[in-house]
Length: 323
Image 1 (cartoon, rainbow, N blue to C red):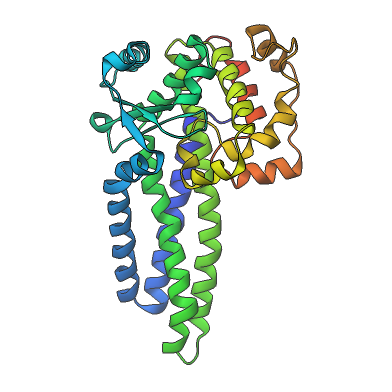
Image 2: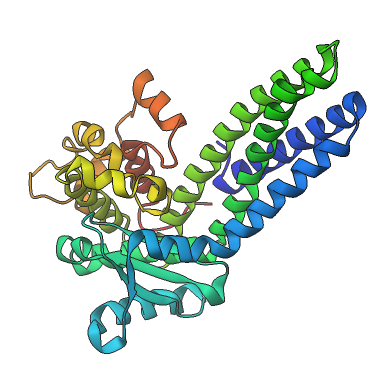
């Protein structure tokens, strides 16, 4: 089985190979003037997204940054995890949303921010909250935001190429053959690269889980936290979930999938205590996990891994992080 790092490298290589092939085809078949115009626009949009992204997240999630005296316990946990991760202490905030969750964002390590919602502070115990914070700080340490931003521009460019050649190129070329062919090919590659970017997003969640364990958190603590967050999200009104639909990729789990995930996760809590302990996680390690076609399709279109598969991977860590 390929390691997570090798998988991510392969995905990135394939994505850039696809965009290079499309650029070459456009340049050889139709000339490169218009393509570069749209490429520059797309890169400009990526830059604007990169620069304004933190502000948009703050506004959408109604983030209020904390002073140490407002929540010294939370500050102490973030400081401990940041020190272990070897990164600067990020700004710490509370998101004024009803969904129990946590997320990290920022342009770089010096601009890092880690936020929790009020609901998660009341839902998780100290070890579980530390594990979640370790996951989010691992996102910052891994430069996830920059990586996904750079990768996301590839399907964006392909979509603009497809739109240009399918709907405008044919008007300029009476023959229409080459423009339609390039447009269709660009649309197909747009769909493929979008799936690859989603796959890369799921890999980064596995990486952050792995990072949390490497910071000294127990796999069972993170598994238990994920389990509680799924149940907490399932109790949230569906209208409230819609408010954060566009930002769910930032969360540690996908709240919109909570109702589906409950069916799988309830079997893990053997003693019905409301959490997952080390024994219960160890029992999962010996089980053969099979994901049905519907769940597999849903995962392929999601920014987060299937939760049962994700916790199953945590069970294999056994207190250490495998390479």
